[in-house]
Length: 415
Ligand SMILES: Cc1ncc(COP(=O)(O)O)c(C=O)c1O
Image (cartoon, rainbow, N blue to C red; front, side, top):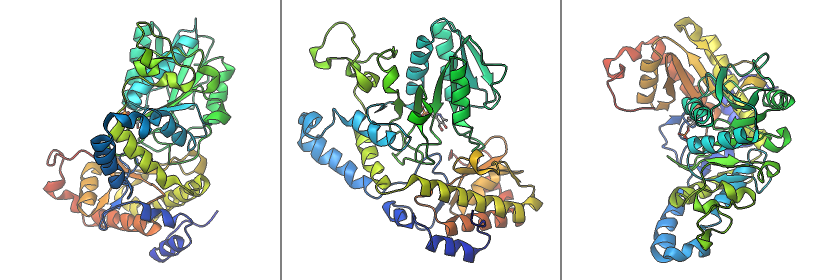
């Protein structure tokens, strides 16, 4: 393992040796911004504006309704699903794109809970993203099950013969901590239960092996590290072995075995097509399809290696230069326990985040006291991250964050 980057000169040298440096030109980023919020909204791929213009002007404007066939609109959810699947270790035919992560959580949780007949407990993470917890509550209520919240690594004593489904995020959205997905999945399976992974903070950020783990379902968004744009459609992974028995609750006509027969009664399509619901948000999905081109020729192992080197830089810099200002590194120090973001706990974290944004360093704040720095290896350089850390030190050393303009409630921008 290379030494962490610990000077601007070392950052410049790391950039010169970066096998992913070519990918930055695939994005249209403002020149005066260091963008560390790709774990919330990914940057704009340079080819997307033209793809959206084509979708609107040619496909919609000229080809009109024929686009369902001539421009591949009908096949798009499965086509984009397969492209996402390739980034999360899913063989073709197991991922469908559409709707929101929240909707897909409802689909997946309900379907898995219905498979676990007789078992009456759903387990989720009490620190999971709120929507994951809210949907688990709702599914438990609808199906008359019990919901148990735990801390993810600590399933011992909780998993039992009553557990139907365990639903975790593979990377914690606040701290960036990565859980041991193989060990957790294996423990869940040993207990005879089913495992659902939320990969919002994984897809496009680090490799994952859904098929290799024999995960029972997964969901994820596409507007973070997959750069699909604001509100871009989510995805559902349902492995081939479970597709025939999956009783998905949202039985829209696009998931029907013969949608254009317009029958009265629902008969699910075979394969992942049963994961379709209704008419998809085509413009968003076409933008996402174009955005996925940034992955052409990209080695996910190189993405992971660069992501870890970037978080090593943040951690090393914080240890050496920021501890005196009360900054605590929350991100785990073991590589295998890290996702692709760094989280720093500090006093006045909200105000510091705003002061950084004012200087062109865009991270985000998570209550009560965390500054999150998303590390998207395709468009961030080591020099960018070095600049961000030096800016942070200056904001702390000069107490620039005390400017009333950065106080809570003074701006309407939610990051
Ligand atoms: C782990 C996780 N799940 C779900 C979501 C969001 O769900 P939705 O796409 O339905 O808004 C987020 C958003 O940040 C998230 O971090």
